[in-house]
Image (cartoon, rainbow, N blue to C red; front, side):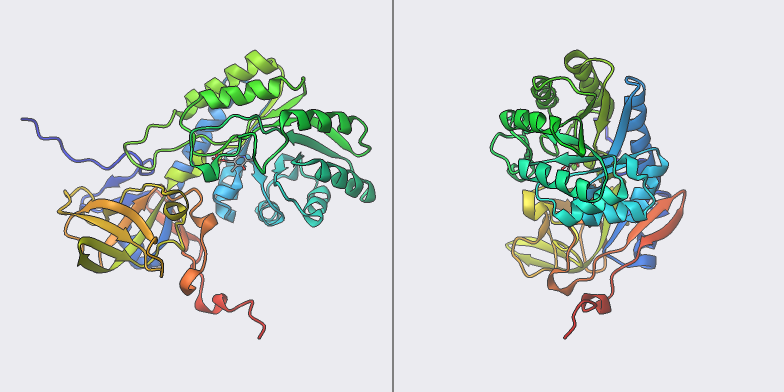
Amino acid sequence: MTATTPTLSRVYPLGSRVNERGHLELGGCDAIELAREFGTPAYVVAEGDLRARAREFVEAVASQHADYDVLFASKAFPCTAVYRTLAEEGLGCDVASGGELFLALRAGLDPARIVLHGNAKSSAELEQALEAGVGHIVLDSIDELERLDRLAARLASRQRVLIRVTPDVAGETHRAISTGQADSKFGFSPAEARRAIARLEGADRLELGGLHVHIGSQLFELEPFRASIQAVAELGTFPTYDLGGGLGVAYTSSQHPPAVADYVHAMIATAHELLGAGKRLLFEPGRALVANSTVTLYTVETVKRNVSTWVAVDGGMSDNLRPMLYGAAYEAVIADRPLMPGTERCNLAGKHCEAGDVIVRDVSLPDPGAGDVIATPVTGAYGYSLANNYNGIPRPPVIFCNDGNARIVVRRETYEELAARDLD
Ligand SMILES: *Cc1c(COP(=O)(O)O)cnc(C)c1O
């Protein structure tokens, strides 16, 4: 019999390892020391992983197509340091609200490389985007088209726009993050898109750059992406096509999403075949850039044995809503013995007043006890951005780790801040 040495799951950030003390190490920093220094819960970002994934994506596109832009779908992790890091790696960004636009501009992103999305943008948000001079506004309805044309006239500006097409392609994903089916709150059906295209020919202030398509998130099959390009190809020929985001990532070692290179290759080959080789192609990856860069550290407050074993930590649905929203699966280890075989099946529970506040169900942990530091990997996408103050829990800090150096890029929220907006 050959004994296999246990190794860290491949879903941890690049460069993660178990160090000489047997502790989990992220970005060269010992997770136990991070927990001691910065407290828990904390989002720990391995900066090298974040940069490497951005570079990998850009290089994959650049090696196959000349006229492109890669836009970080910033709703996945909209903090200043992430905007800046990805901008340093050559990315623009997309934003889905005035607030995200504000954050992106404040972080120093070039407005010409910002795309504004949203199925219900307010006039104030549209004005904000016109005044900032964003590269494209993605139109989502005829109402919005008319309104934007009037607003641009009032501000004496012109705006390049894209039309978001809902191609009736449903990617295999959770219903809540599927956006490409015919009956969706997002975008124009192909028939309505034709109307919008015709209407834009007579618009005074809007210039149609092309079409946008984004069919959903956490997708593992390439075929629906190809079908979405087919659907936009049928609507005519335009200078620019924004092919959206949606590439899935592995949250656990049993999940096998396509490699970035394979996804990009499939997208570009299909675009060349169906749209022509000389188009401007925009990509909007969110999750695939940031998810695996981050690990959340928690501290165990209590272990209880009621039929099953409940390991309760100092965070939960206030810092990671995905298990509750989508039934998302995560892994967990104890940070000072990450490779030790589990001794019992546990539910990793949060501290919130909801029975559904369970971060990981049925995870095997080695003799968990109060005070243990727990690490849950792959929390970089839609963790920070969906964080909330349920039960008066201050939101966690974001710690960037690189080459053994840790720095706080977002500090922990304070109790005072919980009441900062209360006027009475
Ligand atoms: C959310 C979103 C993305 C990014 O999706 P990911 O699954 O995170 O890659 C891209 N484009 C649009 C329009 C989106 O709404």
